[in-house]
Amino acid sequence: MPSPLFHAATGYFLGKYLPRNIIPRSYQFHRFDFNILYPVLIATCADFDFIPQILTGTGFHRGISHSLIFTLGFSLIVAGIASKIWKISYQKLLRFTLILYSSHLILDFFAEGRGIKLFLPFLDQFFKSPILLFPGIHYSKGLFDRSHFIPILYELLLSAVLYNLLTQWQAYQAHKAAKSAIKNNIHSHPQLHSQKSIKSSDSSF
Image: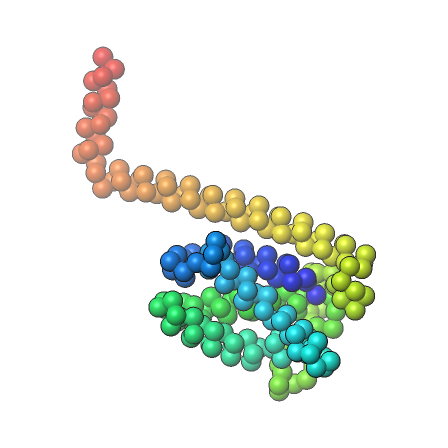
């Protein structure tokens, strides 16, 4: 499965390049912007199931927290609480939260390993894609095992490529919006534009 670092990076990309400013700028956590912090936390929190696993010794990981029913229930509750605190649209925050949490399941679904129990509590069975996009990180070998090097390097390279593509796309959209604004300004003030053209031609004599 992908590492928590890549899940966090996915949350960062979604928070940065999806429609912005869902959360008011007035809400800051020290120097952290909640428009970035919230997506990173939501995209990674499915892996917080390691906490009850450590406390109880029971295999929780990739269990109920990686199921569709938990994704929906978690998103409904968190979006409901957060929308009340931040006084923002519940529907917008719910959609945003669903996308963020679902990103975790999608990445794990396409990763090497046993898969995830998508349909708990109705069906206690692992599911994974026949097409694998991510090499597995086997934590049973230890946190610092050398076998983790290739998967983490792959994730770093993929993150760099995604960041470059998204940055270029954002720059293209900004350039396109600027050209459209200039064009609309010319069409909305044709007389002013023509006067400027006459003045510039007169000054050339």
